[in-house]
Length: 68
Image 1 (cartoon, rainbow, N blue to C red):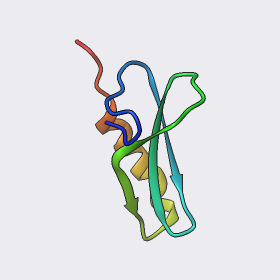
Image 2: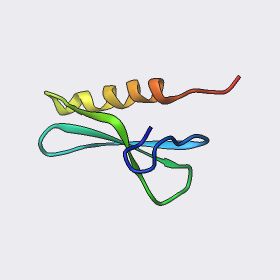
Image 3: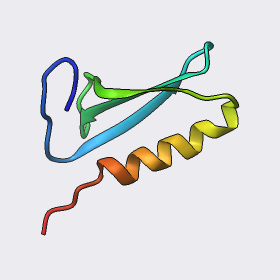
Image 4: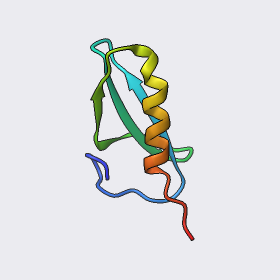
């Protein structure tokens, strides 16, 4: 579920961005598209910037829903 367009399905790409304030924001886009959409509830504040990679990995696991 995204803030801008609601549900998105299919081949998606995930991007997480760490802001200067320590907030990680998750965005998705259709594979190869140019427009990114914010994942609903996809923001969290981390205490250490080294945790960014772990947050990204967890989101990949949560958002990956292979068919079948």
